[in-house]
Image (cartoon, rainbow, N blue to C red; front, side):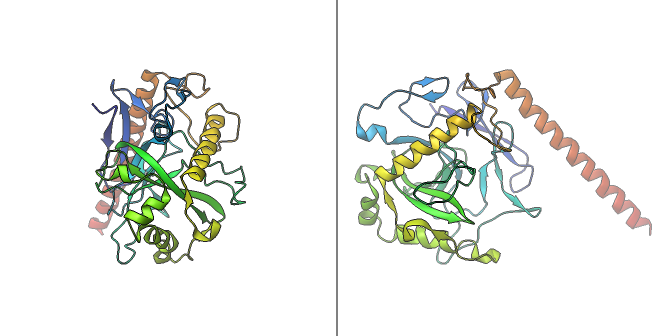
Length: 308
């Protein structure tokens, strides 16, 4: 049985669309803060503490799927909203979609994030000499199955690419769903080169060019675009998890990041299950009131126009 389920609010492909997360008991949770990073963890106040039994098990993480492969809508965990639902990114008042980068359609992997990680925008990464991008760490899942938005899947980490986006470090983990039919073949980045030839090159080019249709320059990379191996990637995950811990314990400047959670009991941002439900309902009521107000204004304008 799935440990997490989702609940849609609003219409897809609209600014009001939200995908909220619930645990197995049906209580609202944050996919950013309340889903454990490690699959094998025994939680103490929501923060994984148990040591893994072996190297392979140590490398299994939860991934929150934001964008299914071959789709174009730029969906993301809403880090600045209560309980951090998934929403579609908006820029200049318009919903964002990634362009098709020839010969590909939309995102070329299942794209998402590792929960309980955070790339601190005030902390300079020693290997890239750039600060973080203020988001959970991104994951490109390369398995054969097209996953669904909001799925929480177990993935093995294989490597990482260091994208430098407008002077910020934006790590891109390469991973594979442990339930993929070919998962047993993949243990490190070299296996991707061996069993999926051309995929890493396509990934590099996709990230290099995907903003050009918006009139932006090519993206840049640390390490001359070299994919680092699993060991390097695990250290990056460890570092971003430590940053998340500091964020949830209010030991660093989180800015506008919303840290409301229902699992990390020692966090000053912890709330009850009932408070979490009230947050979701109040957010929905606010959106409905705004929609009614907008509709009323539109009707008034149309009435004025029809009388002239």
